[in-house]
Amino acid sequence: MNLEKDHYLLQSDKQLFFRLKEYLRKEKIDNFNQLKEYLEKQEIHSLEDLWKFLTTTDCPEDLTLCLKGLIYRIKRLQNERLDRFSSSAQVGYYLQDKFCGKTQEEVVALYLDSKNRIIAEKLICRGTLNKSLAHPRDIFRWGIIYNAASFIIVHNHPSGDCTPSQQDIDFTKKLTSVSKLVGIDILDHFVVSDVDYYSFREMKVF
Image (spheres, rainbow, N blue to C red):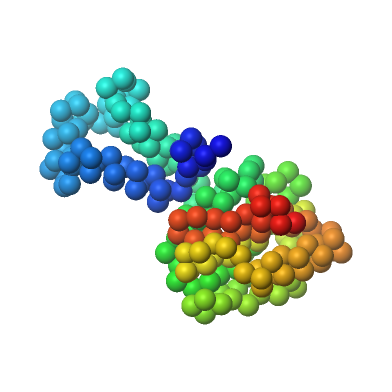
């Protein structure tokens, strides 16, 4: 299944805005005045009018899916954080948006309770332009402090290539070994960039 094509709500904010931009470009809408004329032509004068337009056959399918996706996200925004882990794709796109534009590599841990509710997001370390340093003790120390049942680890690749390095793979294997001793499960390790993410769990690396 192609998530990017079929599941608009799982796309990143950036991808949805690009889709909207592409639609406007095809309609030859390049500035605010042209957008205003388009809205007036469709008799859209409020958000309520916009929502009604999105549910009519006059609204193209791509525009409907794109704008509904954006509106859905705006309504569900809660302090710019994810409250519950339900799927790798959900977390992957959330983290992709969170790390978008960062020029330094960072390692962040998401700590969860036994019901996969996120207890805390913790910045573990921040590296140089293309290198970060993290130690398992720093990750598990906070897991013990938060009394977490499990955690998700994530770091970004500012280069844009989400392919994990051998160092990333070795680090994940080390975390997996320590998690069995400490009793705090590692649910996934994500590598993210501005436009994509890599899930070790989805790729069955561990």
